[in-house]
Amino acid sequence: MSKPTPDVYEQGRGMDAHNKVMRSIRAQKDKTYDPHEPTRVWIDEDKTPGGVYQSLTIILNTGGCRWARAGGCTMCGYVAESVEGGSVAHDALMDQIEVCLEHERDKIEAGEADGKSGLIKIYTSGSFLDEREVGAQTRRAIAETFADRERIVVESLPDFVEREKIEDFTEQGLDTDVAVGLETATDRVRHDCVNKYFDFEDFIEASEHAEEAGAGIKAYLLMKPPFLSESEAVEDMKRSIRRCAEYAHTVSMNPTNVQRYTMVDELYFRNGYRPPWLWSVAEVLEDTADADAIVVSDPVGHGSDRGAHNCGDCDDRVQTAIKDFDLRQDPSVFSEVSCDCEATWNAVMERETGFSLPLTR
Image 1 (cartoon, rainbow, N blue to C red):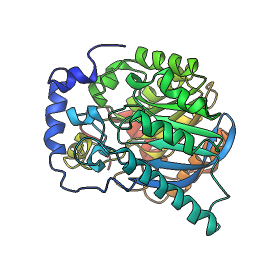
Image 2: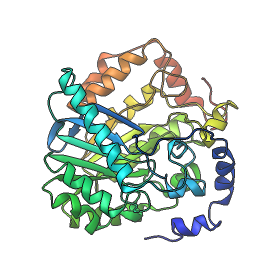
Image 3: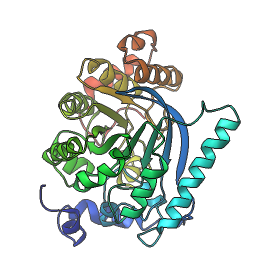
């Protein structure tokens, strides 16, 4: 793995400028959270190499990402939703799992879910495989809890992807995917725009560890981090998706949304950042439909000023096309939506050259 490690950064070295700013921003957080309640849980549908599954998505409330406590990623506010104190006990984490299972049972009873979800997706504000966040005892108990399902996704930074940890799930007979927040295949963009410390080579190494354990890789990319123009962000995503497809069976492109207690939030309120256009998301998906991977996107907060958006009139229609593409992988869906604001987007793509001066809001 590349050096320095997250621990070195926590000692005050490395990306000091970004980290110093973000520590001061995150210090504004004043809300506390119950360690027995998950951050979020919902039921959806997902396209996987095994087909389309009903999915139960769980965001566990842990002690938070260790990298975020040092400063962390410029766009990520999830650490602000984490439990104070740096750790959550095993029993409390299992209480959170039970709350999620109860949510699923309620949805089934209400006729809003088609039985138990075949796919389980588990996230934290950091890395599920980081034993500071989720200990080995809890990880194994979760694997046993969901042994009757078909597929599971767990998210982690590359540092914590180890064969022995993943085998806790594959040995239960679960088709297992490790989701890695790579953000971009371009090291300079990841370091300078996202403020993540690892290199693409570390992602490759993590994919090798996953393969050794019989698991797959799902790569998460970030559409339009700060300090990129709209056209630069689009081109970076196209390159990144094609490069990731060599190592990941699924690539999920996440358009940046403006979260509280982040550098992106500070830029946004100073008119120095605009979330990506939904047309940009559609452009990337259409262009990379031939990539050797499943490519999907789920724009959080679409249509709002803080999320990926167009003019307001066509946002829901474009979002529907994106969701349709996610499940069918058919780029022709984008030919079925149009709007006059495409001309504005084209002008932005051509003329916007400065990251700090978005041409539109």
